[in-house]
Length: 148
Image 1: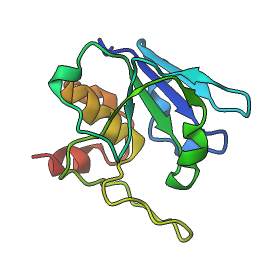
Image 2: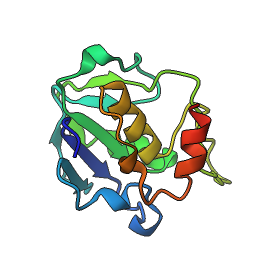
Image 3: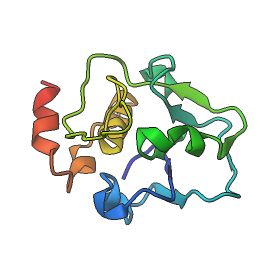
Image 4: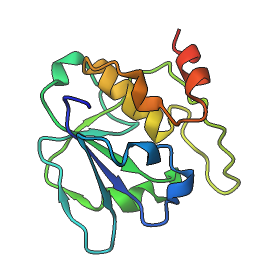
């Protein structure tokens, strides 16, 4: 169980069967919300993972984590659910996803990671290196090897 509370807002079109976070639904410390047209989540004080933000660091400890789970194409729509003033942070550079992306209609950002990869790295940076977060992730071993 992470010491850092984690809230995940999932886009309504995201298929749970393909979701890299699906194995965390029953773990304590995780809250999953399904986005809808009327959902408004006050992200004030939350660390919101975003590609185009200052890097996350150990000094960010003590804040809950907010993760938006979506395809890159739908991310802007999902971001509109978040109100307030979240603390936008990115995963420091140099880490590449091992998830095999195959979008023919949208260019994924080079720094983009699978949600589970971003979550694991964020918690690790915050001092919670728990590889069991990746249990159930098909590319767990390849991802961990890429970090060495």
